View (tube, each protein chain N blue to C red):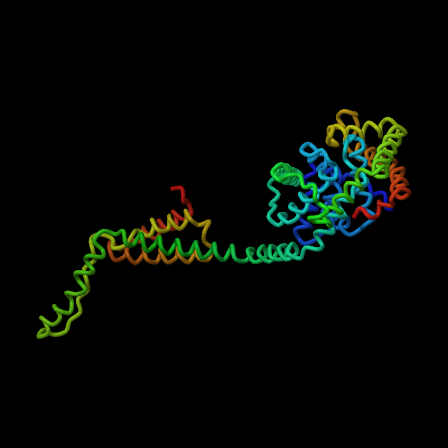
Length: 202
Length: 214
C-alpha cells in the first residue's frame, strides 16, 4: 500500500466537488511543499505564497488529474514550475522601491505576510511546536519512538518497519498511532494555548 | 474521540489504510473539522520530526487556499461541467462504439461484394440490353425462361464473410452478430443450392463461426 491510496480517495472526492477533501490534502502536504519551494527562494513568506499558488493551480487542474501518477508527484511538478516561474519573473522585473506608491494594498499585504512569518511571535511558536514535539518523542517508550521515527524520518512503510522491528504490521500501526496520540496531546496544548489555531487549520 | 477512528486516521495519513476504508474516512475527514485539525497536527508532527528548517509549522496555508477557492466561482463551474461530461460519456461511448462497429461491418460487406470480379460489368451489360431484346422479339408469345445458374459464385462465399464477422466480433453485439451470421448462412444455402445443390456451404459457416482460428 502507498500514500497514493489515501490521496486518491481524497482526490476523487475533490473531483466530485468536495472542497473539504482538498483542505485535507493541503494540510498534509503544505510543509513539504514549502520546503520544496524554499530550494528556489529563500524568503519563507515568498515560499508560502508560491506554495499557495501551486495548491490553487493544482485545484484548478484537478478535474483533469487521472491518477496515472501519485498526487504528490503531480503536485510536486506544479510547485517546481511555479517556483521557477516566480524566480524568472522576479529576475526579469527590476526591484520596485516604490511599492507603496504603485500598489499600496499589495505592498501592505506583502509586508503583513512577511511580518506574520518572521515576527518573533511566529518564530517562537514554530520553535515551541518543534521543542514540544521533540520533548514528547523523548518521553515515548522506545518501541513507539522507533516506530514513529522510522515512519516520519526514514519514510519506511509499515511492512518495512515491521520487518526491521520484528513484529506484525498491525503492531506497527498501533505503535505509530499511539506515538502520534501522545505527541498530539502535548501539541494540542501549544496550539490551543498559542494562537488557538488547531481548529482553524481546516 | 473514537480511538478506532483515530487509529484509522493515522493509518490513512501514512497511506496504509485499505482503499474501501479510505473512501469512508475521506468522506468523514472532509466534513469533520475536529478530525481535519487532528490530521493537520499529524502533518505538523511529521514536519517537526523531519526538522524542516525555514518551514513555519503554524502556517495557515490551508485556510488561505480554501479562502481563494471558495471565492472563485469558475472553479466550481468547471467541476460541474467535468462531472456532466463524464456522465454523458458513460452513455455516448457504448452507443458510438456500436454505431462505428455497425458502420464498419456494413462497409466491409459492401466492399467485399464489390470485389467479386465481373459482377458489376455483367449486370451493366445485361440490364440495358434486356428491353431492346424484348422489343425485338415482341412478335413471339410471352414466355418465362429460368436463368441458367452461373458456373462461378456470384457473391463472396458466406464462409469468408462469416469469418470476417467472427474475427471482428468484439465490435458488435451478440444479437447483431447472430443475425448477420444467420443471414450469411441462408445466403450461402441459396447460392450453394443454385450452383450445386448441396448444403456444405452453410455447414461451413457454423464450423467457421465456432472455430474462427480454422
